[in-house]
Length: 119
Image (cartoon, rainbow, N blue to C red; front, top):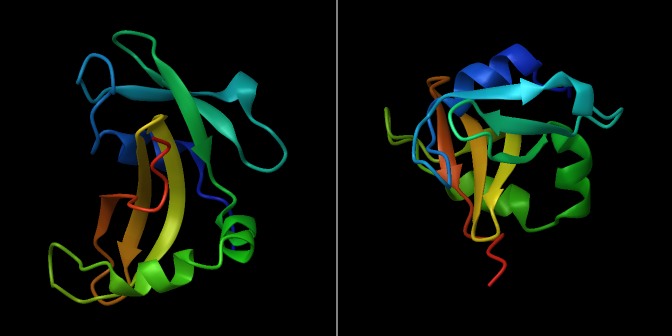
């Protein structure tokens, strides 16, 4: 399983809103890129930054509930249940978002994680 390219991450981040200013223009700070694919996403309006995780192979191995959750996510396009996890972000302490691809029609969409609420 390959890491998602940073260009693809930047493009797909536009489908969510900034936790602070609610805009959807983001970049990835390439200076923060780690060998494991972790880096920082940055809102281009208010400069709020948040972690972006692209190594989903390691994440899926260490989080045993996630594969079961991915089988239950419905595609907003075709309603098929079952997606592939491409990358994830932690937008705030209360909001983790998975960026997924439908296994049936290949639609890409964000899905708020119900498993990573840090309240």
